[in-house]
Image (cartoon, rainbow, N blue to C red):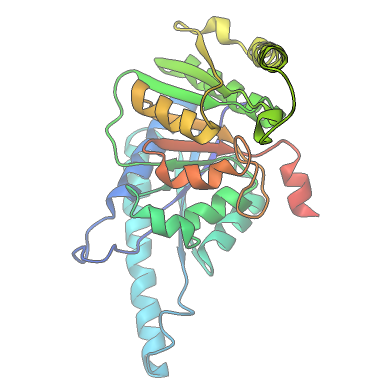
Length: 316
């Protein structure tokens, strides 16, 4: 999978409750910093995008005040975008900015399609985002509907060596996630971990009538097949070119989302890379319906990618 060349950076100028006026939202500053970092490593061009939606916010004002509010907010947004773009240019990055009017997630996706962006970067706070994600935040909508990969950054200081976890369900899109991780690993000093939680479908039934010996043979067969598929995924990448290689982990005693959270905590993971399938509530993200419960709990940055044919289906 080719690394990114045309990146849209979502700049959210809305203040969190209790934040002083004029303060820059911390998670947005992190997203901007990460985007500049990525651009400097890959040569990607950045487009900083702010979306303003006045439809709900000014309906309680007198009509005579509408123009004053929209003009003032737009002027302030242009000023911030100019400052951010100039910051990126001083770092040697090719950058531009756009101010869009409308529903945030809708306008971002339209811009992705219009300009053929291959990555969206957006800040995701330290999970006051729990309720924002469940209540349909821009981040969740982008993960569900955006046709290109989406990187949700978190408030953290990146170390010199990055620990990356790829969660694989053995699907084609998780293979793409692994290829992307290997590509990043060639650019930065990264330790990459590949995790698969083996699923035993027969174990979901209360009783199968099988003997303990037969059940154990069944477990060994399923585990061996999963391990073979996982290593086949790995063989399709250039992992041998990485200084640290890729460490493979196969577990079969935990539910997938529990295995992922447990691994992230124990191994100080800084980025989780996963595949997503765009269905209602993102069922099928990583390893089925578990992911919707998993997403708000992940403490690290998340880079989620769509199947190769998703853009085609999105445009139908």
